[in-house]
Length: 105
Image (cartoon, rainbow, N blue to C red; front, side, top):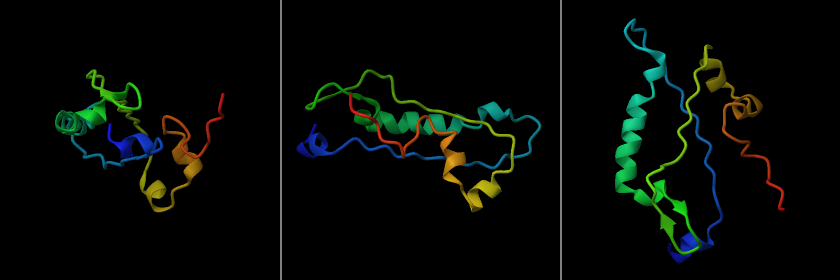
């Protein structure tokens, strides 16, 4: 890792992407994320350090585990959420609460 990587604090970017459902009888809603997964796989092959884990302060080990890709299907009109987002509601679909500080052991 570079000196900058070693000095930088851990950063978490909570991203939520909303996709409009295309009304197609042959489309399975569970497969909507397939293009994103394929694109992510291609990207990580070129930026392998993004898919790795910090082994120590000096190196990143790439074990081909990638990182968590979490998908949530919601049977609701998301336009209301997009126009006036309420963080408490959005936090429920994130893997952990980005606004809470972890307590030191």
